[in-house]
Length: 166
Image (cartoon, rainbow, N blue to C red; front, side):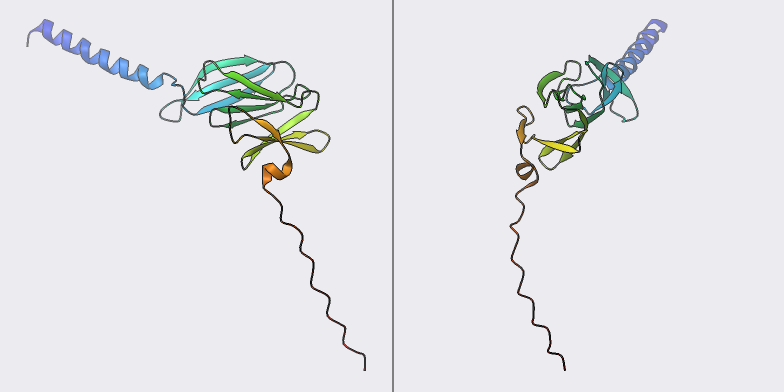
């Protein structure tokens, strides 16, 4: 090989290595996401291929205090105090879409996943259940619907007669 051929070959190898490194660090829609709360909103990060690196995909500026965030797949549930519980679809982390807001006016301070539902915790020691069996169309649900039907209480067996005193 001539000197010029070697230079071209070296340049091609460097280009291949550099492009492979770039593609490994490029966030892809549908990848795992993580959310960080900051004063004034949330930041959505995409977890990169090796699981040790993160890339900022987007920032959502939100009104009010954000108490807690739950990530379930591509869905993000934000407990926003009196702003309610807001649901975002982050299938495309660079451009999340607000799907719904529930219980605006209630002081939502927590959010937990339970079965096919999300439980929004209200500061007055109450809870609201949201059916998320279809994540694109969440809807309010009663606790019975969210947690499954509770079994009917069964009558207890009659008490045995006490033995007679001697």
